[in-house]
Amino acid sequence: MKLTILKYGNPILRKKSVNVTDFNCHLNKLSYDMIETMHSNSGIGLAAPQIGILLRICVVDISSDKKKPLIMINPKIISNTGSIYNEEGCLSLPGFFGFINRHKKMIVEFFDLECNIKELELNGLLARVVQHEIDHLDAKMFIDYLSDVEKNIIFEKINNKKKEGNW
Image (cartoon, rainbow, N blue to C red):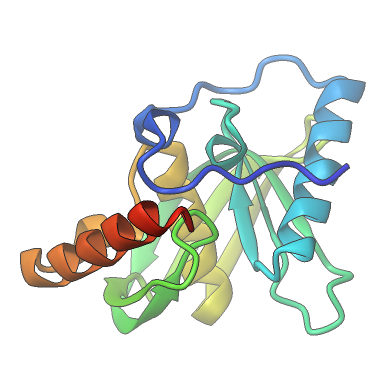
């Protein structure tokens, strides 16, 4: 089922998520609904707060065929190295992009849907997307990393969209 993605300005996006404690059929359905929502919005990552649910769940799929989704429950970064400056966007800020630094490589630990603990070494785009989604779980957004000038330009454009009824 396709879910509604919250846009920047919704207060839920600025609240920290809590750990998942119940691994059940509802968690499975939510995860697959998140994948469907992400894919139908041409996204490569989605965190539960973006659909109004303050649980530490995120889904990622950077595959070209959109058939290799990664579901992460209670993800946390164990270690990271390097830095890379690149452009990011966000489904909660449609049409807006900014260049920010992220770790080039990282190790992330998370649970899968069967409550098995996993550890993955990530780099490149996948590392960037996972960091972006974990930020959402911690009530952060990519615009928080931008300069005040860049933020003000985005805020002005969002306000114009709101006035036009397009936000």
